[in-house]
Image (cartoon, rainbow, N blue to C red; front, top):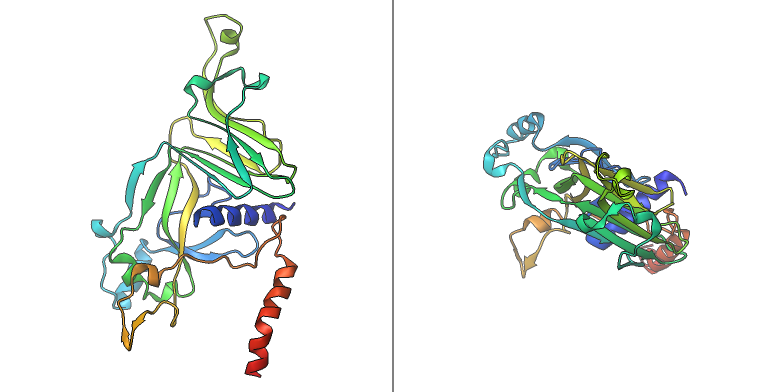
Length: 295
């Protein structure tokens, strides 16, 4: 399986499970207010700018859109720090962490995360774990309503919230029906493991018995929020699709009307992350009556 196809498959599976977008390369920063397009091959966001940049504010002023995004009430807000967040796609069952000989050097009593996952054979499954994630988001109420009119955001995707963390683990299964364990724990120093009290340093890091190529993990020992594994992505609606009416009266559009959750720019994917050719046949069959009628 190509890495670019693995990226798109992982992102698609997490989107189906959470309505949010995974970042296949979490060390690459994605910020609240970033906007751009989705690479239809990899599924990754190609950032073109940020609504909180000075250049964007200058453009807003020139377009007569009266909002000063440098005002503290419009700046991104930070939520509380959660303990841990574990997401898994369909076909994945989370079970009890089982003790194995290779985990004997882990201090599981103090483990921040420990979990085990059973993946369905013949099917790709995705797992995303974030340690102590913190959400940052565009404050609701006015920002999205006004910037919706900005020329730069036409046909663009907008990051409305992000989840950052000091440690993440992401895994895409290999269709073998594997069982994978993971833990974020302190390793027992070798001298201590041998019954010697002096020497050795305790190190906290991810342990896993996963063998597949599509595994990524990191832990910042200083506790810095360096990684962005997950974010919310909205798409600027246009035309009649975002408009609501009561009789002949057009109703006020909410932020959700103006910025709905975006659909992926690809057809349904097969288990290897490629667009399923059967879907195109089904789509053409469904559209055929309407095409014949129009002609």
